[in-house]
Image (cartoon, rainbow, N blue to C red; front, side, top):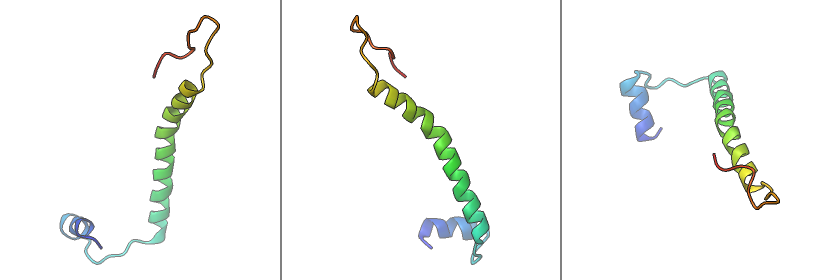
Length: 66
């Protein structure tokens, strides 16, 4: 373990020397993936639409900004 992780687990939480099982690791990874996609996807969609927006006949753009 690195220093910061060791300090947090041993001194702060009091879990020194315990190993985590794979089920919580998989569940935490899945939850992190869901949260990441939920937060990033709308921002990425707006960015893509701003980059690919058509220029209208009068020279204006459809989307003005975020």
